[in-house]
Image (tube, rainbow, N blue to C red; front, side, top):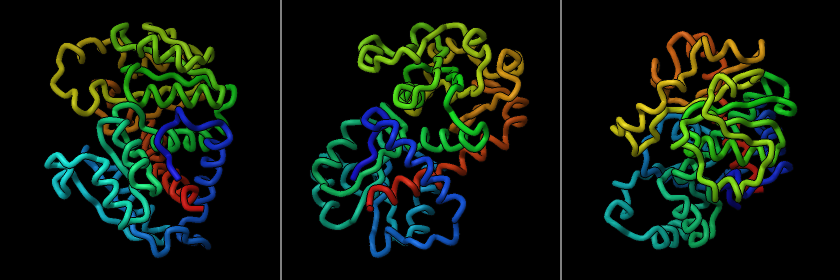
Length: 297
């Protein structure tokens, strides 16, 4: 009844969701099953969104459900009501919730106090729905993630890099994070992860050698805007043609968007790989429909 993190998942669960997402994509517009029929879901966002909001609203409706969007200014959370009180109210009125917020503990508390299916649509700790879309894209483009080298270039201690590390632990592919030393995940996280197939390096060119997938994200996550000192650390961590020359000949480039051209990725590289990157964005819809359907079986 919950999808809150990649960390708490496992290989069987992740693979089943990817296969269901592929099926959802192939049968879009002709679903025989409407698992959310008669249900109303709340989408509760305290962070801005384009792809996440649109994909969830469309997905819930395509699965037969009704949806209401609630920003923090629409409900009492914006005035300081505890998440557990909001959860206990909504749990008596709606059938499920999709939450995009800052603290991971907030989505955990919402699930525990509401008693309804709950999905993490992004926190500072993880971005699990994005990872599912990315895995679906890799499956479509490369056939499998097995035996592939997947590299993340940028902030090694953000929600995307951490979610990818947990996915690598569960699914077994080689995963490399290339980041400035001060932007690496802390040792206690790496100890908890305990994944020998995940490595860290400060050398992006070395990380990219033979890579099948190059993954990047904005250098400054939401809430970090304006941190010029941190942004200055990433000058050597741009995804550009020189970096990609180290990759496998059939590599792909992923970006979870929005992209800041000429910062984490060049205009030339983004446009060259736009088909894959916007297929990745589209796959948010299909991956999230699979998550929704699996939660209400």
